[in-house]
Amino acid sequence: MDTQSPESPVRTAHLPQVTEPRNPGMDLDLDWVRAVQANTSAIERRAATLPGRRSVKKEYQAAWLLKAITMIDLTTLSGDDTVGRVRRLCAKARQPVAPSVLQALDMPPITTGAVCVYHDMIETAVSALKGTGIPVAAVSTGFPAGLSPFHLRVAEIEESVKAGAEEIDIVISRRHVLSGDWQALYDEMKAFRVACGDAHVKAILATGELGSLRNVARASLVCMMAGADFIKTSTGKESVNATLPVTLVMIRAIRDFYDRTGYRVGYKPAGGISKAKDALVYLSLIKDELGDRWLEPDLFRFGASSLLGDIERQLEHYVTGAYSAGYRHSMG
Image (cartoon, rainbow, N blue to C red; front, side):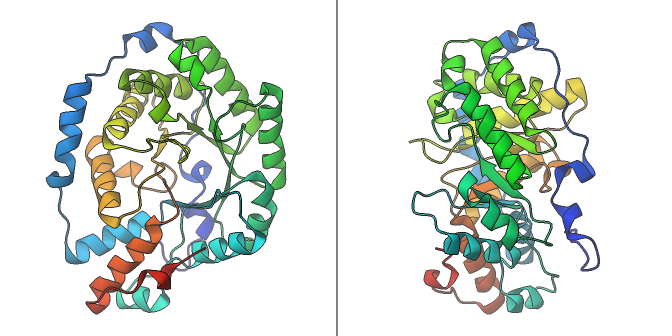
């Protein structure tokens, strides 16, 4: 697998604007939106076959898992977050794998794709990550429900950008999707994109609350038309978060958008992805459906907090032949 040399600038491995033109958005095309359908039974059948379609072992598995680490948005979004916890999370983002394991794998140092926090912890995270090139992502717009007054949601984005967040994870108003008000969703997303300025915006669809896979497909498309840099499954707070059927629908919407516009939009599954084997399934699906270009941090991220710990255990098992205790990889 390709790796970054120790002499290369760390920043180029992470910031999307360095390697890919941003999606500028386009006018809302309601004919395109309304033409989008989703064959739920076919999608679910295809998704059910995915875990058995690809099997990577030994050094190939280790290589894929190292790649997965570089695409994790290491996240803490708890009401009891503290400055100390965020600093520990940032230290883990800077050195996600033990140097001895990397040395055994003949790998240079790697980092996670980003650190994701609430607005109140942006300053702490920016300070802790200074000089690393690891961007800070902030959840915004009344996360997770997105039901605060609109002007406050816009102002929250602006404050987070001012505080140093380079990526903003916004939540859409689910009611616009459920009522089929695509113009309202487009206008909302467009306003959020403008408020982000140079910061990249990830549109969280909260797919578990959208009612159908067709709604997921249409909402994905509308958000990309409005200029989303990424589309993201979930807040992690819903009862149903990232799933393979939803992923298949969203990345095919991304592929369709790219085919028609020439702009690549990123994808971020979030919530419930905690096992290394699950990460491998998602990566293989991205490779099959979108191609190798999307297997980079500027176009794919995992929204996760516990996934890294399981990947570490798998890498240590590959190197030493034994599994380490879970508490050795705690980040809390």
